[in-house]
Image (cartoon, rainbow, N blue to C red):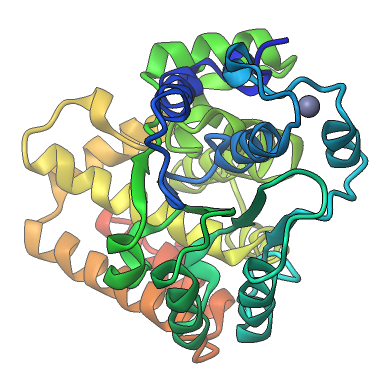
Length: 339
Ligand SMILES: [Zn+2]
């Protein structure tokens, strides 16, 4: 039986091959850190890799995937393998706490129960706060020959340099656009795949997530609303009321991308580099009628908003979005009042 994930998610095949070669040559480190944007399948790949490391069928040909049949694979598939320790935020978007990392240290110091190996799978690593990161350094500095630590991160920039320097690093690349689009065509019944893929920054699994949730539908609605507002076909306050029900993080990001798109056009880049293709008519118009300085001021404002959101200083997102809309329409030479 060969590995499932690199077949199902073909952009992961090269990295899987690299891991397989390293096992074969006995060059696999004790701590591996996988870096790449969210929505590429890092976690699901590492789960299968963990299963392979724990698999009791040690035949050399097996490095193409776990056997799926031994006692260890059965336990793994049942979700109750005693030699696998998963560390994730208790709730999505929350931190990995220092108590969870202390349990990692304890786990590393125990004897394997099924075979002669144990695996820790931890991520996203950026969810660890500074105390949790420092606590993990101990396990990274004093490796146990019987434990492999598998870490993944969607935001490598937010990791401690000392964490990165103690791990073998693996970059998980976003697949080329056409490969990602072909994959989506084979794996999704939805329409407007290109727009979802752009929204997901080219990460195919993220695109699927966005299409299955509400975000992609809201995005399409946002684009339509912007066009309607510009043509005075939509009611200003009704539009804002509708947007109020959405996750403000996304709406702010769309505005941010729009303004960046304007700068791209002003800098002489071509239309195909725009993030929000659906509004390229508006973008081109704003680029034509506005000064670079005005656009930069709006961009600075958007960056300040992002910082305020990250620091959770509790800004009023509805008010911010309303202001952004006014600013955008005034760049277009319109005011909100006339609608
Ligand atoms: Zn097995």
